[in-house]
Image 1 (cartoon, helix red, strand yellow):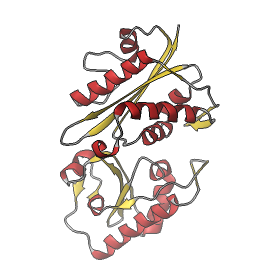
Image 2: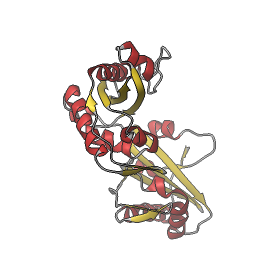
Image 3: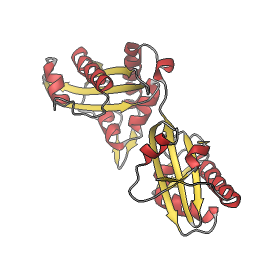
Image 4: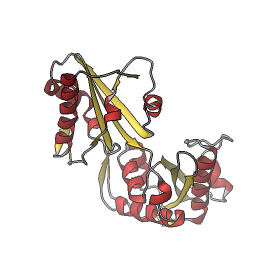
Length: 274
């Protein structure tokens, strides 16, 4: 990823037109990869995201951070060859419709360098300190939103998942989930495996939970329980965990990392006891 010094006015206008086409496409139901998708929220154009053209060997998140945009998530898509914004949009939509239509992003920028076109999609790291309720309340909201989601059949990637029975709250799983969220927040990592090498089976067993089935979803940066659950539903593997009828119990943990870049860490631990 590299910064362009300055865009000629005509190319900058074409880039703005390309970003507007993406928003117009998101605003209405559309077909993506042979499947219908509903309308999704519009993206906010950000000038800082329009400064970039893809270059080999660069790291998008680091480039955005250096430019003063603190990304919670970011992706870039690129196409070479089209001579106008409409042709560029059609080529990008054909190859990257799932990315262009994702709910993960809030902001957009587009860049044109000759016949090379780049779209950057991103969401800034939010400040959960001002947006989240008490973390225990947020965990209960995740619990409720999860059971609401399980009550309706849905597509999880390539897998159709039928509606599943509601989960019961389990204090041992909640302890395991809370401990992992706190550990990630305090030590500044984001992974299922902690710094000691333990994963969810070991963490649940350490709380005395004897499991027949066990699973975990984690997320970082969301500012509400509804946003966290929606993000898991939008991700095929997380969605399958959430909808799995083999799971009968759940615990949820939420912790906020207080730092220069505060972020909320969310953990769902699913289980079925022996």
